[in-house]
Length: 612
Ligand code: GTP
Ligand code: SPV
Ligand code: MN
Image 1 (cartoon, rainbow, N blue to C red):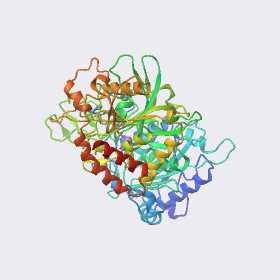
Image 2: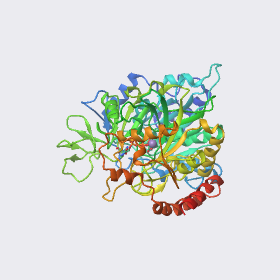
Image 3: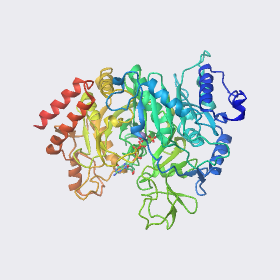
Image 4: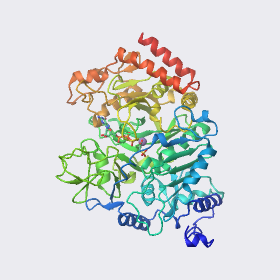
């Protein structure tokens, strides 16, 4: 404890709040007294603040200013703090059953007792920043507010890119009648207090990590990590885990989905939402550069969609975020030129990519490497090195605002009416390039049984096939069976003709030699086109035991330079592979238990029967 606090005086900055919001003031004081920072700073989101904090991060060795990109910075994390930590992520509902079999659970009282002791004095020697933020448009009828308290400058500047934050968000903490609005309390500490005179490290964090949610209170407590999904609490913690519970209670959906706008050569506009697990292609599809004549894709969101019914009975989607936190490796002018152009404009943060000697960034998949680099581990790196120069989960963080393909309506509080929902995963076998569901219930079954190989986005083994329902396995804030029921119920709340049509895609099926059967990226526009033509009743498909699948003739493959045998293989429905899938789905449903909706058990029985 510092001398100031011992004297019973207030912590500097604590009383300089630019608001009289009672709940906010009381909570900030309570946390400051527990965590004992040297000072409190109320974040405004100004350019002056950005310059001051980025300069502080450069001086601390956390950031290197990039000579080759304006107002942009390189950061290398602690080598053990590079991804989400699913085994350290908890849903602390009062009743264990509400967390379900797919979440870690602890009683809220027990968790709070443990974490309160971790937070005690955890901000010593640091500044506690108060970040008011808003997920989704500020002009929404009910702005979705939150406040993150954090002792990390890296978090503050990242939140400036990823959310609407600072003064403009704080302005929304009172409604038009002058009443206090409620907000999600999000507490974050890297868990690395500094003793007087102690030299800080470039990436403070703690080997003990907790990413904890108290869904009934709409409260988030995060400790020990500085990495994106663990520390930028507006993202996965609020907009998926807490928001999925809000959506269950209030009748809407919070999903791990991109949102894109597709315009046909006839100038007809369609909006598509797509759920793929982490590092399985959402950002790339959201920014797709179509290879087919006359079709245009514009971007609305790349990671999260909140979907509610409009007065017209259609499902409208909003992107709650303000920036992209995208996977860097594999991103290049050939695969995702729009992402490359967005980051080229600057104002971006790069974490765990490689640094070039002339002050630029490089990662695997970005053409020929230079002769020398500083790797994400801060080691000298040459093309002869065995290690990767960039971590597989290295990320760029960049504002949507400067993406040239952003749709003008990306910030519209009404959202955009969704015509089609895609579920997809990363599967080397079994799952065809695209399958159309028969109806909403069948589509929900496809989503509920979605499977994918694990990626570097979460700590743990990579390449292991697991069920990842609706790409939400790590993000459902409640019981997965209840979540499936919520999807089924959502389908019953609207006229079937107004519901989005559901498709299941797989860009990642492989040949015997392990190469991808489908070229992917911009060529995925051919699949989008087929899906839209199905909605319009213009494209053909073959009925199979798993749903409607196109033949190669049904797809527009004009100008595609690909081996027809590979396309056939990508589209193949192999009954043996599917029969082998059945026991895995049964095991999955059994794991979730008695909350699995009967209608989904019926879908499984029907699939089994069709496969013979
Ligand atoms: P999160 O941000 O983790 O939620 O991931 P995301 O779903 O947005 O994934 P992203 O689009 O960043 O893609 C992750 C990886 O998949 C990158 O290395 C891409 O290059 C690769 N990828 C994306 N689309 C395709 C595709 O159509 N085909 C193939 N083969 N790879 C793809
Ligand atoms: C994901 O892992 O799905 C991401 C990155 O989008 S993170 O924000 O770290 O969760
Ligand atoms: Mn994601």
